[in-house]
Image (tube, rainbow, N blue to C red; front, side, top):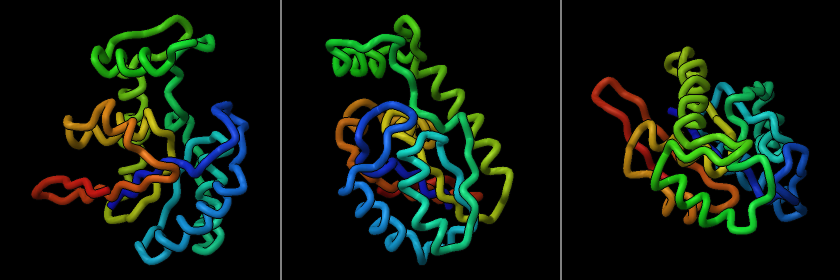
Length: 174
């Protein structure tokens, strides 16, 4: 099983943005929720909000948090966009849209796939994978093409998707 996790509530979008007070409470609740899932490995985006979201679970399970740069959030553009929401929607309509200084959904999806291929090199493990909203939806799309912009818009902080990988197929449950 993979537990694909969106980080808890944060103070911003920068890589060093920390969790809010509510986000810290959410991180403790997330640890309680995941504690009995048999998790034996934790892999996280290097962004502070992702690491801090999973730290309480890592502490309770005495596990290290492995950092994987390929789990960092997709960079929509190299500049602040006035209408970022519309641009994000457009990027889900055309996965090859690449704004200046940014990364297309196709590129981010390939990066995410590389991360999962590396992570899944440990068979029969239950693994917590902590990332960010846009990349999370792209990772889910690797397992089921129905995931798209509407799923991104419906995400919460945090959010957890259990992906069960078996010989007969894969299932995803929120």
